[in-house]
Image 1 (cartoon, one colour):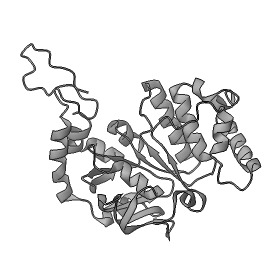
Image 2 (cartoon, one colour):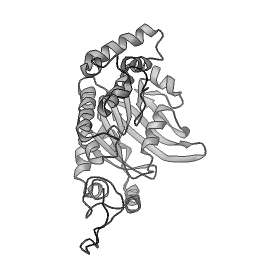
Image 3 (cartoon, helix red, strand yellow):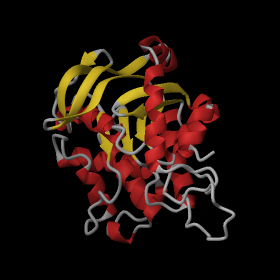
Image 4 (cartoon, one colour):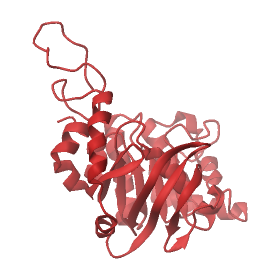
Length: 295
């Protein structure tokens, strides 16, 4: 992020406002400038054919013409989306673009005014969050600080199985998580409050795995974490995708990290999909680089 002006006169062309990405003060733009310039992306929005090509032959999650928001406030304006089974999609864009609202809408946290959401061809648009998790296999991992600090690690995992028919099922599912992540198993009797930031994030992700979902919605996986823990979290997500076949839809403010991880990236602007491509393509896109990657 951009630092304060050094007062030397050498930085007259530099911007001191906060911005996106990892660029120096010479390259980072203000949030206002990013939003203004990103608006022109919308005129070049990708077609549905492009979205389907990026998703591949086995499309699992679809949004068609979704208009959604909170109460009377519409945030998403006819958003369409395609994600293949076992694929990862990263949503980037300026603040207020509607990225988290896409996740909220898929999971059932918003008002849906028009359009549809489907999993494997089955419409789930108006299912409540519990039903999205139980019958559609969609799990939501919140931004941060969603662990119960005074409960043990094991008890936190049990809470992930609250929709199961019997407590024993949740305990068995938690044991499977411990087999997968020895780091958590070593701390199963400890209060969650003693975990490091990376371990807490691992616990939040693992709790979502208890119900064995097919789709993971992940909001800002790197938020608040030190760099060494960010790498760990993305390694975990990569393993869930490649080894366990999970489909991942994420919002990531660190656009470079998110696009480097994801198979596909969408740029959202003002509640619309303005650009789409493979993660690698968007990393090489000069407009995306200038506006969101700090260079």
